[in-house]
Length: 135
Image (cartoon, rainbow, N blue to C red):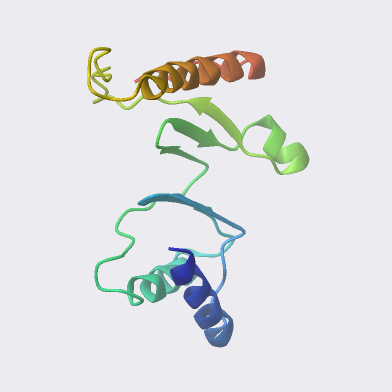
């Protein structure tokens, strides 16, 4: 994907298309912030989708908040003071809390790290003074 981003950035510079202020991805999920109107954004998506036949953007949200993976990202008080986005832990409505069984063939560190990761998210959320979003 890094190659695609580099290709797209070259195309955007050449065609004078707005580039996102921030663009992060994790495997096949992406999150970005772009300062432009919907028509300009559509041009960016169109150029991205033209790069490869099997790699494309098919969902996006406009607005001040979005659920992305296990985060709820929004413009809170901090945004209007210093431009920082706020986050809360988010749980999708379809989450069935199905975890890897302890007796599975997965290496022990996989299960241990998963549990520690979940606990870190809760601790960080409490530290920020936020709570789980309700759905």
